[in-house]
Image (cartoon, rainbow, N blue to C red; front, side, top):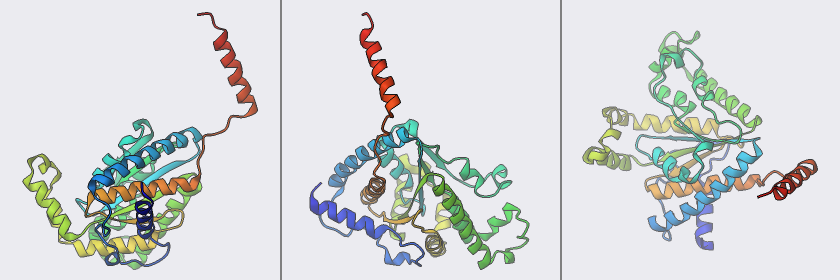
Length: 303
């Protein structure tokens, strides 16, 4: 990677990071690549380099067995979450990657608090976990459609009038506590919002309708939810503003060009991992002695 390209990508990665405890407006964040030096082919080469870096980190993460990584992906429909998982994580050892997708809660899930189904899907120590949608749906979809909250059968919520600003403030605080607890117990948390324009979403919906191989991706409900675009944008702004923390940062990723968004996410993950300065665990004197004894036993074996 040339120095100029490296600097451009690093600069954009820094721009994507949301400053903790600041109110954001999504209008201040571009949905497109705004440079001149990159194209899809070059990005693919750089992405491959990024995958190799992530593969090395994954090996060290597993060897340490003290930390785990949680990557949260949130976005409007058709923003490319599945593609991010496929193209960025394809170079990792599948045995050490845990992907969880969250759809409408089941009756069993609704009989627990809204963190329950996410908590049991968390990665173990040494693993990388990816949430395709997450606990944030409980302050996004439910904020646009507060009637869904009634399905949770909460003791303090009897009618829609009970779902007020105080309720949402409490939910943000609950999410912050949840993530702080994970962090304090060894979870590295990185949260990404794939930011696309309304025009780009329309084009991707039309592509799904026109391409028979992509028909399965389209749901009539997608167009229905599109009518609430502005409501969702506001819900994302409020959720990101309230929950971007130093230990659990949000990154707003321009995603109108899929190749650009994927490259940025891979670069951010690599940069965040570099900060940890992970190395392979060093063997103790006792372990080194055992290794040498085992080596000698192998060398002394008769063929």
